[in-house]
Image 1 (cartoon, rainbow, N blue to C red):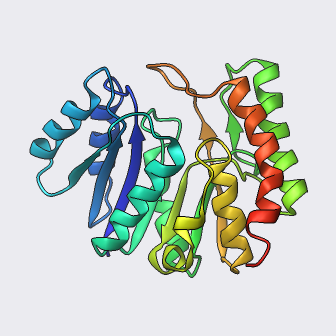
Image 2: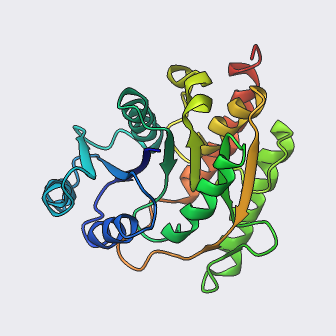
Amino acid sequence: MKLLIVIPTYNEVENLPSIAAALCALPVDGLHLLVVDDNSLDGTGVLAENLKLTYPGRVDVLHRSGKLGLGTAYIAGFKYGLAHGFDLIGQMDADFSHPPEKLIEFVNELESGADLAIGSRYLPGGSLDKKWPVWRKFLSGFGNYYARTILRLPIRDVTGGFRLWKRAMLERMPLDAIKSNGYVFQVEMFYVANQLGCRYAEIPFYFADRKFGKSKMSLKIQLEAAVNVWRLLHIHKNL
């Protein structure tokens, strides 16, 4: 089994060495890391190239010309994984908000028949960072409720980006038709997968806030997502 973890980066030079080390230390055979770097100003792309020497044959890098967005970064990573014969393709952040050790549970779920394993902050046993202020927790929870209600989605955490896909499921996905390029990208991916009959498993986890760097999330991004969720009903109505 070949497993690829796709991590988009923009100015993650403080986090990338640690997350690469944690992933490569997991007791999972065939695990590889793909860094999709959007021309980081802090040298993350150069560091990623050096990691290829530290972990020979286990790390690769896609260098992009600038900040082209989270959605297109993941789509590029998914296509790379499919083209290079990976059986499982995962997505996660570089900042340890998504605990690498949980991937073992994700793999077990896919080996048991699921097409997609999803890390959930909103199942019993999952939670948000204890230090988050009340308003931030409210926005996160409301964003999930809002998207789930409008799109009638069965999962609890539809906006989370900690996921592991089975190759066969991604091959069925119309990746070129996925147009969201921000916060709502995660919503669109699951909405389409659900329309295609995806068998999924949700796994609770504790979402810790980043220790280094700045969050890419903003109120503007969340407001744009709220509007774009409605567009999904029309874009994919023929699935």
